Length: 193
Length: 179
Image (cartoon, rainbow over the protein chains, first blue to last red):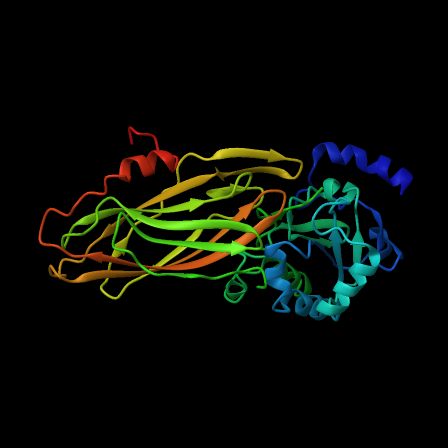
């Protein structure tokens, strides 16, 4: 992680990645202490989901099991789904690995891994602004970044009928079609850096 | 939605037509319905406002919230075909922190709208509105609130009484006196 931090520092100044750009590599530890590199998944479609389980915009999707359902559906189709938490120690959404494990079990989280980014380096490299803030990566490039859908609300009733940009991007990739919307403004709580 | 608390306010045919308070833990945020007049004439236009009050240090959002947050969502229902315009937001304050820039209001804000009273109401009727409001307040963390108000406005033949506090409410709610 040491020299990786140096690599990322250049990107941190830019503070964000745009659709079409190369996805910055990173190495983070998951809630079970296992290390994951983005480059471990080369060749696969990857979803990055910035999360904070205490944010009402995140609860909107987890309380009704929707996020877990999408995680299960797409990991079942060989997509790598990485949930990332960039809450700093002492800030909302930062937990010990044991508490993370409990919360993941209780909610039935189906992500490939839940990664911890307590110093916010990866969040800043990607310019993650909100929870949720979603990225889809294909062939090493960002092919979608932004909001999960087009209904800025905390109400689970709004999920049905919303245009889910992540699902649309994944569907397009699977069908070999062009991604219609590659970039939107993310909505949610601020990331608790 | 564990965090969501709902309360139901009973209407008061007064200056403040309906008021409610939602509570999340020990954090309270209140909404209140106000109008320029205390009664309406059939076919007339009524200026209305929804006031949001936040505890110290918390803010709610402009219609363009910026990098995070959410504008209040107000839905109004009635049985007589009231026409409602677009909610107007006063000039917001800019908030900047490590995660980005947002636009909103501390302490309180009054959102304004215009309501078209149907022609076919008759004096003695009561115009009844059901208002459902969802709003978000944030400090270092965010809390969502949801509440419902029932508003009753008497229908009169002519000369509805003006709300003496209306211009002050607008000033306090972020609108310049000149507007």
